[in-house]
Amino acid sequence: MLTIGRLASYAGVTIRAVRHYHQIGLLPEPERDASGYRTYDATAVVRLIRIRTLAEAGVPLSRVRELLDADPATFAAATTEIDHQLRAQIRALQEHRRRIARLRDGDTLAVPAEVVDYLDRLRAAGVPPVAVEGERDGWILMAARWPEAIPMMMADKVAQLDNPQLVQFYRLIGRIAENWQDDELLHETADLMAEMFAQAEAAGELQMQKEVTPDPAFVRLMDSFADAAHPVVGRLRRLVADRGWTGWTVIEKRRP
Image 1: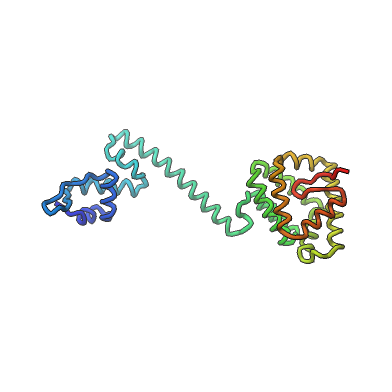
Image 2: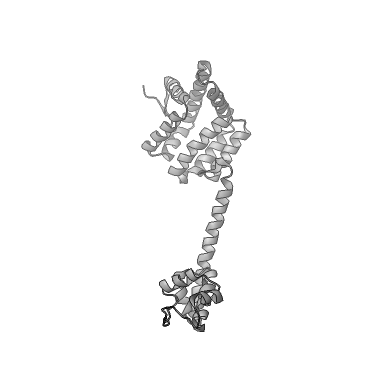
């Protein structure tokens, strides 16, 4: 007869594991000897080894009892099902690893691949880092609220990069961030923005922008986020309003 320590040693598990298996009903508790100690026989060793083997293979403990007592056909079906579950878990873990790898670059945090590509294009076009970071933070919110619209939005944004006015706008924003009390620079930027908004309205882009962002409360949240990012945003919005346009996330022609 074996003590619990010897049983654990033979089966390659810990005493704590043996007690846990007793507690959850996988390993029947044996009779106690005259001194009150549990004593085990070879049958317990075999069952414990089978439990350990199944657990190490990835079988959940909640399924181990079922497999221990199963006939060959049931055992085969159950292990096939468990294998499918493990494969799904592995795929999920691999996806987590890919996401962690992408997080090494801060721009990839909480934004989809289309946005990351767009930010890379902004850098390649010479857009200052401060402007790229502002875009990134705004798209984090947009992607969280309207993930299904991101591919279409990004396709439009990438196409707009062919417009030298947009690149010039981002460069002006970069200059303003360094010297945001330069009134001449602010007025130049507001003039450019008003011109771009007029072109966008003529092309129907402003109406499409409203259609893909149909939540006014969230649009106001986005605007407040931009306002809080830098004092210059509020000044620019006032200057642009003087030129007939309101909004920041969604642009509208100012009513007379």
